[in-house]
Length: 309
Image (cartoon, rainbow, N blue to C red; front, top):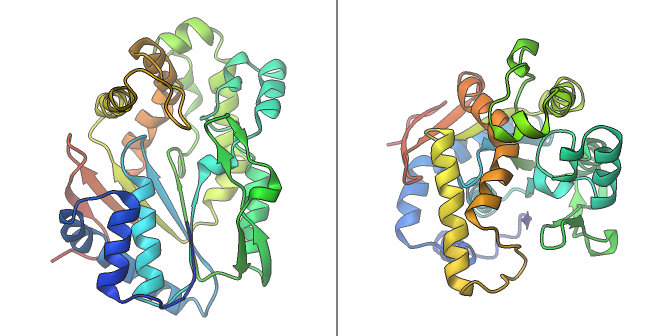
């Protein structure tokens, strides 16, 4: 989402527009005001104390936790309530191209043909984009098209006038530190046991976390996390999402989405399992704000710099 300090709508106007754009019920606003507005105010305070420098906020959350909706809300709040220029970005838009992942799969391990884990992102492109967004000028922001499993042509990327006040960067594995070497020796699921028998895939992922991803993480000024109850709930959320999509399309093709049956979906999610479990176990203690989700994905509690009223 791109946003600037336009001041075009009042509070009620932008919140109504937000609900429509995200297809959310009006009740969502009550929860957002309770849980998210205090954090938006914290971001604003940090920006004001930073002498005008661009503030980079990192947001972690498992698949289906609500990261995209959260950053969209925070971005709109910062624009319309604080008059700042803000941009929400997803780590997903910086996947390697399908050709590049094919080359990585051939050179390192076949599992890298599937996007998702560290090593399948173009971190250098992300770093260059962030640098551009913090410097005066016009910046093209990459976009990835999941419908064709490839990066969009550069000519189609949206262009943003920099420098920005706030950048909100979300990603399912954002903030993850490398696991201890001993933790990699035992497969965590059938995918690792059968398709990564010697640990080549997961060891390469771990090296990426220790290298380019660690350098990226070090740049974040504030860390937020939507914490799922468990990996089992993440799998259930993702499965329910696929079932709803299948029902809406009556088994036909879904626009921009390749439908998976439960077997294919279970295998796909196993690519994410190790690091999802690792993030759930290790990141909460390191985050500045953690929203604890219930099994229905509603926020039940939080820890952070400010307690909601």
